[in-house]
Amino acid sequence: MIDGVKIKDLKMIPDERGRLMEMLRADDDLFIKFGQIYATTAYPGVVKAWHYHEKQTDNMVVISGMMKLVLYDSREGSPTKTQIDELFIGVHNPKLIQIPPLVYHGFKCISETESIVINCPTEVYNYKDPDEFRIDPYGDKIPYDWRRKDG
Image (tube, rainbow, N blue to C red; front, side):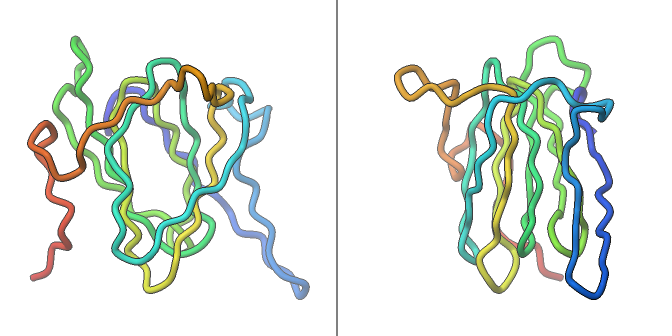
């Protein structure tokens, strides 16, 4: 796993009324601070990548569908520099993934229906000066191929 990335196994608690799943609590070991909460979605086969943050730590959970979340460490001095991690998360594998600053990340919807991601970053989004740095998901800066690996 890329240095600084943390994974929390999530537990689904079902009863006859439905389900409950806690994602992030203020008393969790990995809780840093609250910035905001937002939802983003992707349609089947859509890739939303690559970006990183200089200050913000992301805490991502897929609550509907399945996503392939990919991380790339380009940090100078990191013990995992150039490492790529693929994580398959969502309804069949509920996890919270904590992504530290400066780690590139992106995801691809791999389910047959739209997937929904909830993110609880440590910082509030600044519309005038966003802490978000993007590159082309199909460019050559990150050695990763978003195509499905059949075989």
